[in-house]
Amino acid sequence: MNYKSFIKQHRQEWKQLEELLEVLHKKKASPASIEAFQRLYQKAAQHLSFSQTYFPGDEVTIYLNNLVSKAHNTLYQDRVSNIGQLKQFFGTTFIKIFVEQWKFVLAAMLLFVLGGAAAFLAVSQDVMNVYSVLPESMAQNFDPESLGQSDGAVNSSIMSAEIMTNNIRVAFLAFAGGITFGLLTVYVLIFNGIIIGGIAAMYMHAGKSYEFWAYIVPHGVIELTAIFIAGGAGLLTGYKLFVPGNRSRAVQLKEQALRSVILLIGTLPMFIIAGLIEGFITPAAISLEAKYAVAFVTLIGLALYIGFGQYRRLQRT
Picture 1: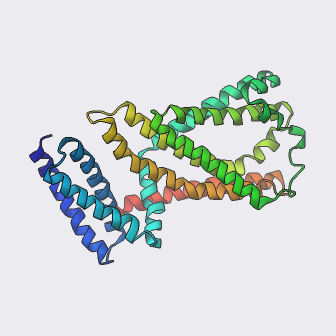
Picture 2: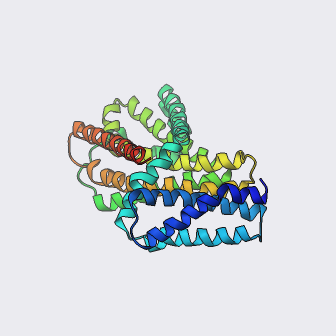
C-alpha cells in the first residue's frame, strides 16, 4: 500500500475518531459511541504502527501519533474512574475479544487436557508413577486419607490471598509466554494439566475420586476458565509472531498486545472469585454435595455472564 492509498483508505475513520473525542470530552457519550470510540482507537493504533514502519517522519505519522495520544489519554486517564467505563469493559469489550479469539482459548484448554490425560493414564496404570509425573516434594504432600480432615480449621483469609496470588502468577506466565512464540505458554498449560491429572489418578487409586473432585470443581470452574483465557491470550501473541503475514513481527506484536492485555485483565475478577471460593468454601465443613452445588452455580453464572454479554453486544451492532 502506498502513501496516498493509505491516507485515502483510512482518512474517514480518523475523522470519526476525532469527532468522538469531542463528544467524550463533553461527557455526552452513549454506550454505543464509547464502543465505537474503542474500536476506532484500536484501528488508529494499528495504523500508527503501520505508518511508523513504512512512512517514518511523514506528516501522516505525526498526525496519527497525536491522534492516538489524545485517544489514549481520553480512554485511560480522563475516564479511568468512571464506573460506566468499567461496565463497558467487562460487559462488552472483554466479551467481544473473548468471542473473537475463542479458538485460542479452546486451544489452551486442549493443551491443559492433553497434559492432564497423559498424567492420569500414567498414574492410573501404576500409582508409583506419580513420583515420575510430579515433582517429588509435591507428590509427597498429598495424602488421600487426610482429605477433608482439616475442614474449617484453616485461616481462610490468608489461604484465599495466597491462592489468588498463585493463580494470577500462573495466568501471567501463560500470558507472557506468548512473547516466546507461545512456547512458554504451551509448557505452562501442559504442566499444570499434568499436575491435576496426576493427583486425580492418585486419589482414584485410593477410592477418593468423588471426594477429590468435590474439593476441586467449586473453584476450578472459574479458575481454569480464567487460566485458559490467559493462556489463549499468550497463544494469540505467539501465533502472530510465528505467522506475521505481510507485516513485520514487531508490528504484529504491537497490534495484538492490546487484545491480549484485554483478555488478561478480564480474568482478574474471575481469579478473585475463585480465590474466595477456594479459601472460604472449599475447606468449609459442608457436605460434598454442597460443594458440587457451588460448582454448578459458578458454571451457570459463568455461562450467563458470557452469553448475556454477547447478546448485549450483538444488540448494539
